[in-house]
Image 1: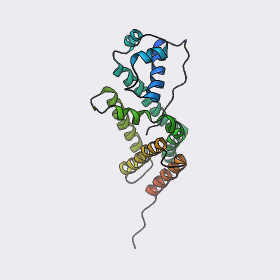
Image 2 (image 1 turned 180 degrees about the vertical axis):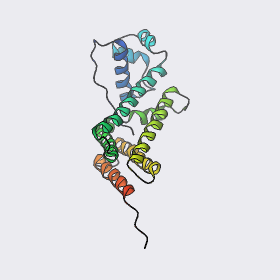
Image 3 (image 1 turned 90 degrees about the horizontal axis):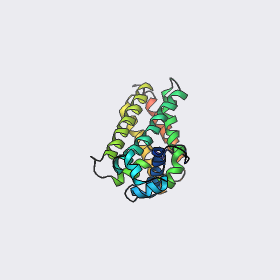
Image 4 (image 1 turned 120 degrees about the horizontal axis):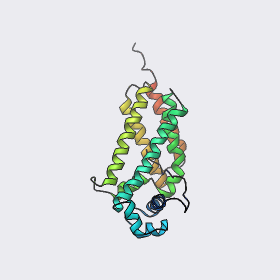
Length: 204
């Protein structure tokens, strides 16, 4: 599940490393990874290329660190819904769907950072690509665990269906193919969870 997760805005007085990450985030989101050079990031961060390379050995290392921060925002979303709905896995699943639904307006303008980055990183050995894949695997494991705790009979299948919906909703929001994607997403996810939880009809 992916939606553009914006970290709090920084101010010029913060340390150079934070300014560099903020500048990189804004430029990568608006212009793409490949089009943005280190010099442009340095100018945006009001620092120098040399300073960037003191904190990040390569541009690839900077891209990877940015994506780790974005991934951490999504892990925090899991933690948040678990804290808000303790012992209620169904509500936690719906809370995750709401997190994605609420982020769709931003996706429609800027695109999902993971989807956009994957398109620019065809090499699966690229360190930033590996950050994305590891994040997705971790996300899937946590969603399957929620489905298990919700007592759904086929948790892996249900988690896959929900994942396809969350990812698809973000693509649809980005390309404008479906109206009211957030509202539709919530209805479908709720229907999937309730369908999976419904008892099988008794044999006669």
